[in-house]
Structure formats: C-alpha cells, structure tokens
Image (cartoon, rainbow, N blue to C red; front, side, top):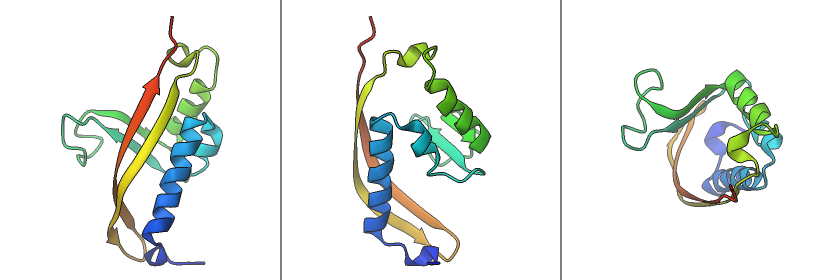
Length: 121
C-alpha cells in the first residue's frame, strides 16, 4: 500500500476530475463512495472565511458521513423538488496544487466553477 506522501498532483487531478464527472452525470451513489464513512464534507460560504471550522461559521453544507449519505438518498428521490427535473451541470477544475503533504495528510487547493442550467417551470 502506498503512503499518502507518494501521491502526485496528476493523481489528485484525476480524482477531482472523476468527482466532477460523477456529479455532472448525477451518479451520486458512486460519488458518495469516494469518501470514507467518517468523512466531513464542507462547502464554505464564500462570503466568510472558507477555512473556518464548521462549528464556528455558516457553511452551505457541513455534513458528516451519515448526513452526506442521507443527502444523496434525498436527492435521488423524485420528491426532491429542487432537482426535479435535474439540473444540467458541468464542472471545470483548475489550478490544482498540493499545499501540504505528509505520511498521514494531503491538503490540496484547487479552483473550480460549476455551470448549472435548470429547466424548472
């Protein structure tokens, strides 16, 4: 088994590209499987500090593994009115950098933009 310290930037990019593709193709169960059960999935409110702890500031999403799984289940139902019909999205990932690397931790910064089109009537 490889150490985290051996992961390269192209491998990180491939992971981020896969994540974006799974989300764009609405393959949410496969996307959820990319994360450990004990994960934290945080989407910061860009008006504040994006690196602030989830318990001290407002985030758009601050889910633990259980809540992330429940979110995927909810979005997969026809009763998810905010996504019925589903939005068409395309994500673009760029400027991927490994900013911290050790035997136990990998910290990555990247830039992304999501294009979303909704057919809501």
